[in-house]
Length: 233
Image (cartoon, rainbow, N blue to C red; front, side, top):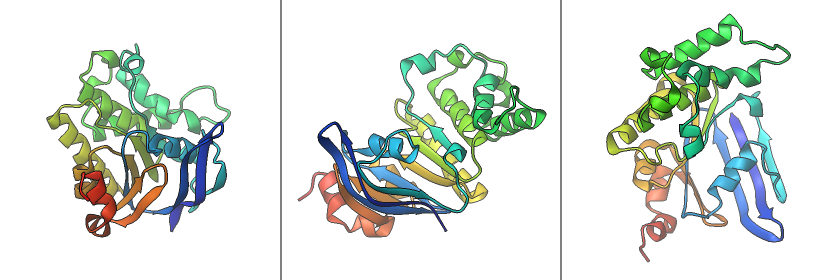
């Protein structure tokens, strides 16, 4: 069943249309990679999916009981975020904010969920460490644990391996694939790494200020959109 259905989407900033002609769906269990050149509209689409940017036209429908507050989001990290002066456990626990409702304090169940996701990411021993003391790869594991605290259905990730070394990059990709295959969490990931997208994803959405391709990896490998992205004719 479709978790997200986008129909006839376009986005603009002022009078300038930055993305148009977007029609795709995300089914439960998908691993969708969104690819394209810098400035092609990928981050704008992410903002739309999160409800942070209203489309100029078209619609974004959520299905299968999914609510926007239940989307686990891992944004691109800024230098300010990397130096956030909080403990690892506090960062992960903040992923439960949207579930608080009218409660003012985290429950024991919230704390248990944070501890469980830290363990899933192999980061339990760092729970009391300051987040800013961690390596880039360790910080991304912590942020992934935080995103998992918000969802059991859908992870939305914006360039999650940006700035990581090759070892940490491979570890992150493997973690995401396990979460998708073993836990059944749907993954939607913006990526500049088309080779990784072809290796790990089940579907590809290629943007270039408009939708250039949407379909399976096998279909994308035969497409002109991929050849153009790689600099072919």
